[in-house]
Length: 319
Length: 265
Ligand SMILES: Cc1cc2nc3c(=O)[nH]c(=O)nc-3n(C[C@H](O)[C@H](O)[C@H](O)COP(=O)(O)OP(=O)(O)OC[C@H]3O[C@@H](n4cnc5c(N)ncnc54)[C@H](O)[C@@H]3O)c2cc1C
Ligand SMILES: Nc1ncnc2c1ncn2[C@@H]1O[C@H](COP(=O)(O)O)[C@@H](O)[C@H]1O
Image 1: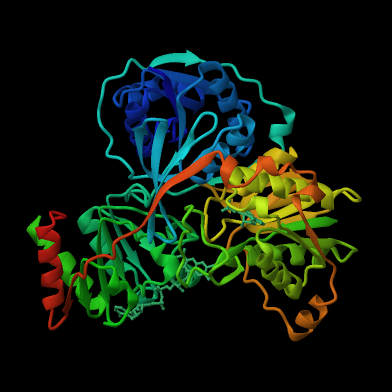
Image 2: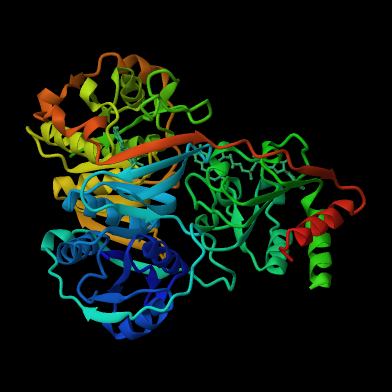
């Protein structure tokens, strides 16, 4: 069986959940191999983590020389690994970095690229992907017809399945050209941990919009009662109530949780684009004609400042 | 400075968007316009020109069907100096790979007389939404990329941008020539003024075919795309959900019941 390369999504060696989803998908297509580009001292910890999700090999590319640069060196590293292993496919997370690494890799190895897959299965002529397009109004299946299929996969596209893997560590030395070091990260401010799940990975997302009037207490209270991540509409972000990293929508994050709760959000097309594929959608809005109600499984027409605290209290009482 | 800003002509996202029989996006039978997110790229290009205060030229570049000239025209009205449309029957149905090839060749042609210092892009096209063309262009042109900029600063040939990266907020520095993409956080785009609309009519506008760029038609288009769409189905409309009106706290109770029934509690 051919190898399938999975680019490990991690922060300083702490492996993120989308990696396990990618490994689970990789196992449908071939033999999962994790590619860890990061500090070599964390390689064993990474191997331990990915071994639980079926990784047979862990290629370790020490990033001492490349971590200060944007994207291009990682694409060169992956190119060299692809040439060495001739994989059946390369899977990357649909993050900013994952997509841009994939884009450069596709040109380098003359292979077709599919971005933002929400499902991948094995087909006769290679992997078949499903994508959700036009703000979630169409579902498209596609495949790569040339080269090594390169696919970026959205978070929450597969339930991680535990499977024991050998996770044999193989250090890899790559050469990085000077040309790839043209974009230098001169300062980096890691995001503050909120104590809540990460927006794109969360099983439940509770969002607030202009209708909160800037008071997110009700939204946050409900989020905590449900163990959810907190999101925001662009109107709430533009008002300065939440940082841009909370924004759900076309120009923010795309989320696809089990449950999405929209509070004081009208449901503009750009917002829908980021949440329309959520499994269950709930809205609280005082305007019974708000377009968000066209999407919902359950809706409450009412004032969020009254509904949310009361619901939170009832939920906490039930637990 | 010589700036090229890549603008895409896209189907209106607030209207009906659909596929043709060959499963390519219908671009001809629908209302189209300059991709909203590329207006931010035009704006930043114009601001860089204004700040430089020199003889900087900004050229809007679009690859698309003939009617895509509307996107270029809008950029001219906003204030860019020149327009270039690359249009050719053979391009129809191209994927990212072929689109980036044509864009790269066009950038090279525009830069034949004087080097292109900056290729400016939007953060994503509103139809494909891949956010990959800027990185592909950078790869093809052998240039660094600074993408997803929310703040742009340039000093001579030195560029600094701020971006919300995946795990951190970053400041990235690079030296021109380079490829940049900007987000909708970079600042509202200007509206064309009446003067701008009149002036646009006299601005230079070139239309190139693949032959003009020296691109073999066999390298682009649907039949040679490196990816193929097998099937496109409209998502079934979500079945109407239950909607209750809150009266004296009944909404909270109903909401809690719903969440409990669905096992979210
Ligand atoms: C290029 C571009 C990109 C964009 N990208 C995004 C994006 O990524 N994400 C995004 O969200 N938007 C995006 N937008 C903006 C989008 O078009 C909408 O303007 C935005 O989503 C509106 O936010 P909102 O629903 O919070 O505000 P509004 O549309 O003002 O809606 C507020 C809602 O709150 C309700 N309300 C008011 N008070 C209460 C109360 N006390 N209790 C309950 N309900 C109440 C109102 O009835 C109303 O329905 C983008 C726009 C553009 C042009
Ligand atoms: N056909 C095109 N013509 C001009 N620019 C384009 C075209 N396609 C993509 N671009 C540029 O690349 C950016 C990202 O596009 P995409 O990768 O399709 O999301 C857009 O915002 C444009 O700046």
